Length: 105
View 1 (cartoon, rainbow, N blue to C red):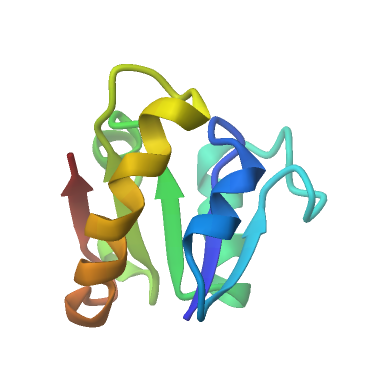
View 2: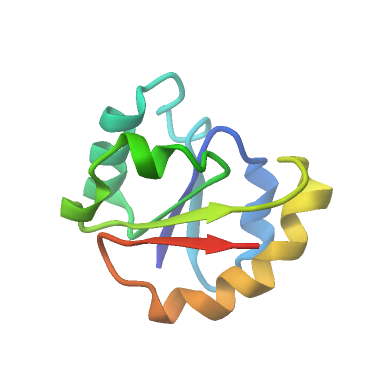
């Protein structure tokens, strides 16, 4: 799957997602985009959008997008806190459906 990591996540998480094409908002030139524009662009280029922004689900109409949203729940967005969630994310990827939000904690 093509996965985009939000700008609130460390780009080095891509190493914990083997077998997938992973990019980050910063490294893909999308930093600074507002959530609506970011999700629209992500939906055009990616299958999955991973974020720590739990409010995005309430602020945007993602149900109409062909994008799977994943909200990580960790003590912080530090790599040491988010990287341990990657095996759970990898396990759930095959069952994620477009237009849905999945919380990985």
